Amino acid sequence: MKFSRPTVAPKQVKSIGVTLIVLLSASTGFLGGYFGSMRHGFNDLSTSNQKQVISSESNLISQIAKEVGPSVVSVNVTSKGSTQTNIFDSTTGGSEQKSAGTGFVVSSNMIITNRHVVPAGVTSVNVILSDGTKLDKVTVIGRTNESDPLDVAFIKVDDTKGRTLKPVTLGDSSKMQVGDKVVAIGNALGQFQNTVTSGIVSGYGRNVEAGDGSGLGATESLQDLFQTDAAINQGNSGGPLVNINGEVIGMNTAIAGNAQSIGFAIPVNNISNLIKSVLATGRVERPYLGVRYISITDDYATENNLSVKRGAHIQPGADSIVPGSPAATAGLKSGDIITKVNDTNIDESNSLSIVLGRYAVGQKVSLTVLRDGKTQTITATLGAAPQS
Image (cartoon, rainbow, N blue to C red):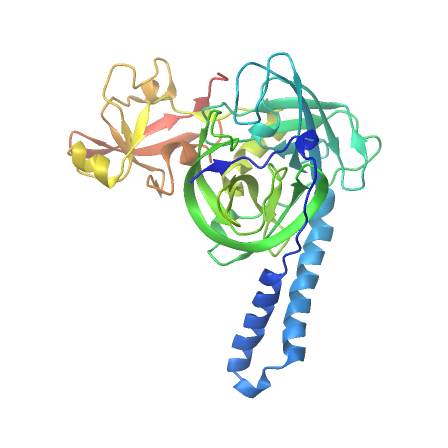
C-alpha cells in the first residue's frame, strides 16, 4: 500500500475532471431513516422521513463549514529546488517549485500546518483567507524534525491587513470512536479553496510510511493516526478534521494513493501541547528523552526472548542512550524496556515517541521500566529535542 502527502503544485494541474459523489450522504440519510422507522413499525418509512434526516445532516455540515471555514487558510509555497527528490514533490537543481497546502488558525497571528507543506528550502510563503484576502508577510516559525513522526509546522502572519484571524476550537481526539461523523476542510488540488467533505472515523492508531506518491522520493514514518473516509485530496495537507461539534480533532496529513476514500489525520491531542508551547514561547520545541529504541511486537519479543510483548526496547549497545540526555540523567540503560509513561501503556497504538510528544519540555514523567526481569519506576525530566 502506498501512502502519499495531500499537497499539490498548482501549476502541475493541467485539467480537472469533476465528478459529484452523493452516495454517502444519501445512503446515510436513508439508513438513518430506515433504522429509526424500525422502532415504530416498518410502515412508518416514508419519503418525508428520509428527506428530514438528509436535511438535518446537510444543515449540520453547512453549520460546521460556516463556523470553522473562516479559520482555514490556503498555504502557498515557493521552494528552491535541489537535485534531490523529497516527500514534498520532485525537484530539479536550481529550479523554483510552487506548491500548495492548507493550514488552520490557532491564535490571532499563528497558523499550524504540516511540516511537508513548508519544508526546508522554502523561499516564500503566503496564505489566503477564506474571504480571498492574500497575506504575503508570513514567517515560518519552525517545524518538527524530519525524523519526528509528528508532521507539524507553524507559520506566523506578520501583517493581517486589518483582518481578524479566528482561532479554531480544539476538541478531545481521545473521545472519537470508529463511526463518528467528521468533516474535512481544505484547499483541494491547490485550486478549490475551503472544500468541505464529510465522512466518518474509519479507524485509529494507524501507522503508515508516507511519501510523495512517485515511488522515487524519501518516506517518513507517521504514527498513531486517525483513518477517515472523508475525501482528502491533494492540497488538503495541514487542514482540519472536525467533529460534529465544530471542534478540530485532527490534522489531515496523508492519503492512500491506490485506494478510495482512505485518508489519515494526526489526532489533535498529539499536537495540543506543542501548540500551547509555541504560543507561549514562539519556538517549536519537542519533548526529548534521548534513547534509541525498537517498538516491541509479537515477533520481535519471540526472536529476542523478551518477557513482554509490548513496550519500547532500548537497543543494546553503547550508543542507545544519548550522552547528557534526560534518559542518561534519569539512569536509563541499554536493554531496558519502557512499558508505561505515567499511566499510558506503550503499545501498537501508543509508541514511546508519540506518548512523550503529548507532554511539554521540562515536564517530569514517570517511566515504568523492565530491567533484568524486574519492574521499577524511573522519573525523567523531558528536554528539548535537537533541531537536526
